[in-house]
Amino acid sequence: MKEIILKYLNNKVEEEEENKLYLLIKKIVTIVIGTHSNYKDTLIDIYGTYDSAVNEIINEIFIKIKNKKKILMSKINNIENIESYISRLILNHIIDIVKSYKSKLSLNKEDDEGNEKIDVINVIELDDVKSEVIAEYFVEELKSLDNMQLCYYFYKVLYNEEIFYSEKSKDAKYKMVQRLKEKLRNLVEDFGIDQKEFAIAVKIYMSEICDKIRHNNREEKNKK
Image (cartoon, rainbow, N blue to C red; front, top):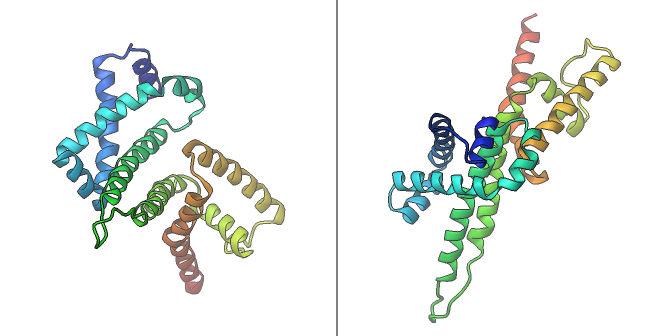
């Protein structure tokens, strides 16, 4: 996919390759819109229909990629997961569209005396939603790592509790954690997630993955 994007940036992409890029962008756009009904409703308000929203956003993303040519050309070889990078680009674009629309709506509101007022609550709430949505996507990236090791690491760091690997030596656990931290650091850098989004992602991950693994581990021990 990197090669196709590079060709697209240099106007050397073939039709079949451009179709692959189009399908990738369309897939991500439909996932983002389809999994968040509040975005879908707002985008339909803006573009008229669901299909129009999808098509317009795809076109806007192609333009955005071209506009980011200098940045992409300089850093694309260092982007390990280009699909995640494009996903983040699309997600931010959609959120910016919704945020801009909500901001315009708030500026058009009037109080009981007919005076214009600015309603900033929607914008603030939307920022929170943005962080949560990005965190949810990053949770899927976290699942690509060793789940048991990651849960061990999170519990150790957050609660100073070692929930797994009692059979391993201190040195073995230290080396395991160091390797995991390097992978986690690379994942965070590739995805471009900030501290708030990362904290939310860890909370979701521990609730969805670690609690389940810990519960299953306890049941296995009780059977013995």
